[in-house]
Image (cartoon, rainbow, N blue to C red; front, side, top):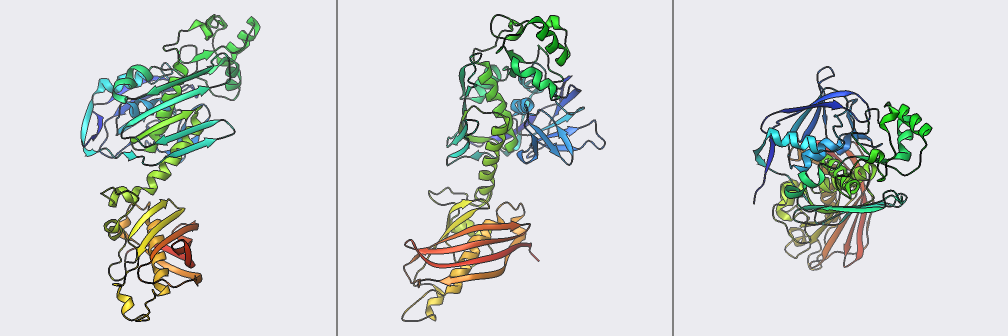
Amino acid sequence: MLIHQRTLKKEVSLWGTGLHTGKECMITFKPAPDNYGYRFVRTDIENSPEIPALIDHVVDVCRGTTIEYNGVKVHTTEHVLAALFGLQIDNCRIEMSGPEPPVMDGSSLQFAEALLGAGLEEQEEPKNYLAIDETIEYHDAENGVDIVALPLDGFRTTVMVDYKNPALGSQHSGLFDLDLEFLKDFAPCRTFCFLSEVEALANIGIIKGGDVDNAIVIVDKEMNDSELDTLAGKIGIDSSQLKLGENGILNNRELRFPNEPARHKLLDLLGDMALLGMPIKAQVLAARPGHASNVEFVKQLKKYADRNKLARQYQHEKKAGVIFDINAIQNILPHRYPFLLIDKIVEFKLDEKIVSIKNVTMNEEFFQGHFPGNPIMPGVLIIEAMAQTGGIMMLNGNDNINDMQVYFMGIDKARFRKPVIPGDTLVIEAVMKSRRRSVCQFEGKAYVRGELVCEASLMATVVEKQ
């Protein structure tokens, strides 16, 4: 079933103070056209610059995710983006009168309720899902973080946290249906920190807008009255408002769920995943995630998405073990018979490596005159097949691919190890060695039955068609 993009029916605004900057801000969510995505707009700055909410623009992950474009920043984007992602809204213009969205109660609930109150409207264009069909992993051994995306025809995620702190312990949570669970089970989950962290956070100039009403503070250390007075001064509130409490939470605040911290970590993960710029079909498993690891994981997803950009555009029929079949290749490359010398692409790692297959048959045009009676494939045509393979790797990622061509600038260190004859299957591997702007150098190797038959170093450039 074709699922269409959606946006808001009308605009809606909220007002409040930013958690880290302490600046007041009006945030207004507005309808946006098809394929617009999420864009923050700083209306407090001359000409109201736009900051696209995309992973390439992340500049800081200290207790929140900050993005920047053309020198203009938006702080702590994750709770706003989690609300949009969780409600499966694809396109939204987010106007702000300050540098940071209001913290509200420390969750995404008030954003989500406001968005639903504005109403959702289906659009003309279909959703552009990133469908994961292989395992994508992020691992940080130093911090014990693992995040994995697995193939799934849908979306679900599970999060486990373990701070090795008896005040919190180990927790886990799972979201299995955005429609049924996001609004009631995850949007209300508030940001949290440990009491032992609060003074240090205040000392580095963040949580300027934090107070006892917009964050859960987990008591992980004892403090006397004098220490509480000092802490209250650091965060700019009256010390009479602070009590250690008896339930392990500052001021005896009640958790909305027994595992609210784990659920909030899942909420943060959704907000950071929104920076991918497209909905995703996958099962995501995360152990001890944080903004830094979330961002690195989303960068892995983006590399996967970029690698498959041409595949989504040109390979309309999914085939096992094939990234591009001959029909897709003919839509990408300008070459035609008798000079189209690759049959399919079977492996592709963006800006790293590509592998093609060339089936050599007696029907090839060149066998009529190249050693007739003892047919051998011309070595220069094996080099040309390498060039065409590398050309596809170079074109991937260009939005205007139909207006571009790959021209080869140099061939070096060409070696022909064994003859290639009719009935052989060439496996051609091109590995990127360097890329500067539109010029790249890659190493090409061709194998028959696992044996190296040809290798060369090639240099090429991508230019606009004349």
